[in-house]
Image (cartoon, rainbow, N blue to C red):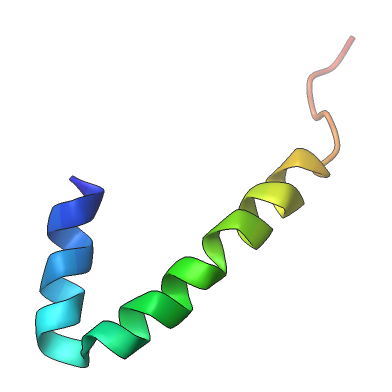
Length: 41
């Protein structure tokens, strides 16, 4: 599913834009690991 979306974005915006967006994905994953636990105990 993600490959189809990124392919569509690459067709419309260019492959360089997709590379730049994909370079931020690991950083966003690290940020989600640092989110606080919202489950009430």
